[in-house]
Amino acid sequence: MYRVSSNIKLKSEGEDIWKAISCHGNLNFFHPFCKKNIVIEGNKKSIKKDILVYLNDDVYERDFYQWDEMTGYKLMIGKKNGKKSKVVWKIFKNKNHSLLNINVYPYKTDKINSIFYPFFFYLYIRPKLKSYLNRVLKGLEFYLYNNKKVTKNQFGKHSWFS
Image 1 (cartoon, rainbow, N blue to C red):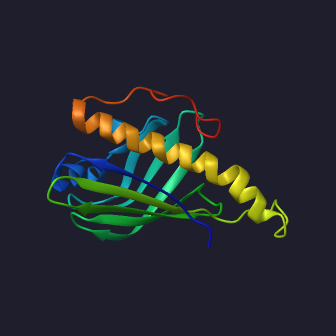
Image 2 (image 1 turned 30 degrees about the horizontal axis):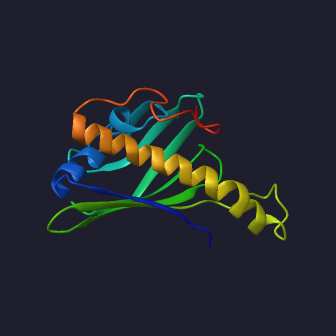
């Protein structure tokens, strides 16, 4: 299974990070490519399903299937009737800092011959996805340290989502 990973070391307490990434509509505050993030199923303690509308108007559904209070969650993301990618958000706490890690296990497209897919993944998908994740984490860092929402494309545009 292919994977793209990104993490960020934060001076914030794990509790503050958890609060930022687990509140309803959380992506509205720190995701630089988010036009709208709406919870469609959940309760005060967790999110079961939400919708992410990107700046380019693509709509993705996020289905949360594991919710570990204060440490992270796992979800599947993709277009409504399309293939889904697995995403894992995990907080690691240390005495001096916290680390937030995001792992994405993208679905394998049928549009690329399986013989060529590894090349396509490592030369195109991985760098694009890594850039995307880095900007999302940079947005979270900005939000936590400045207590301000990020602006659209604050850290640069992305060809897939802007």
